[in-house]
Length: 151
Image 1 (tube, rainbow, N blue to C red):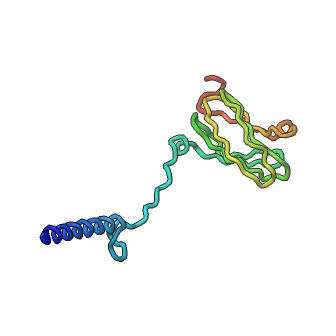
Image 2 (cartoon, rainbow, N blue to C red; image 1 turned 180 degrees about the vertical axis):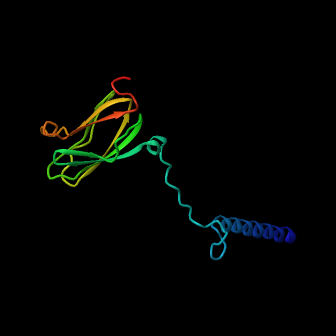
């Protein structure tokens, strides 16, 4: 009986030592943590969607009764207009043309907004829809693609 009791203690001690070794390995158990799996993992930010990555960036500066675009030529595709109010009054940007009529929020002086628009071939009018600003000359036209008047 004494041999059985000693054997049970040995088996119990061996199991306890094995369990302790497993816990230490799971926790990184090494001193200093180098190579022990205890380094923190930082997730990378999600990649930009293909629509965000493919969009052409255009700046639209809205001053008092004038719209200045950062580019003059446009091809059909996705665009992100960064609309900046550089004037002294509230302004917004509306893009109106073939299959599109989109508007930024109304911006106080110094504010900015982004406007995502998919442009097709054709002619578009960009204007400020705030309080008759369009009639005061706050408008411009762009032609997308090579087609002019349907040619």
